[in-house]
Image 1 (cartoon, rainbow, N blue to C red):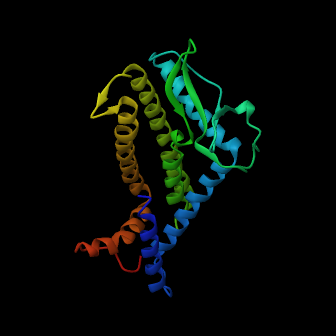
Image 2 (image 1 turned 60 degrees about the horizontal axis):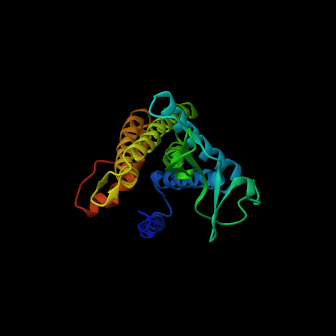
Image 3 (image 1 turned 180 degrees about the vertical axis):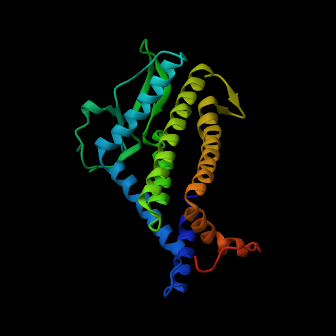
Length: 249
């Protein structure tokens, strides 16, 4: 998907240039969608206090879910910082700016390891990606950018999408922790339980959940469906598929 960003961006630019005098409304929506998705995510990522807040909330919600459902007794270890090109250190020893990300961090950035109640280590840690922020921000961008839709409908859609994604993500995180902790020796085609559940099962389930979420939102926001179908028209024509969408959308 990342590798496809450049050619898709170039194709969108060519499409916009060809329609310079009368830019399709769907293309304007897509521009806004990207802006409203990228800017909030970058702000959260670039402000360490917000970044750490999302990481902590993800770890705390998973721990509380495991405790509440009786699946184990866990606790959060002190937050750690993965330094770029160096080792991991406790947050208390990090002397970086807490309000502006002024230095690059390692792959894990800020993370919270999980432990058993007796202090023994669980081989799962929580990072910013565990917060489902990426999934939420996609829907934020897609919904907020619908400038032709009244704010009451946009807010209603946000109140449906964001809490639902958060709740599903809490169960996802708790499930990964429990399975990894209780089936540490399980393997499938060379994959351990964590890699299998996190990289395959959870991602497939997340994509399926987002698909169902989009279908539900199409009923509330038909404009969203119309814009997406308009953007897909060039692709569908390339595959010889006809569409019934109006050229004026």
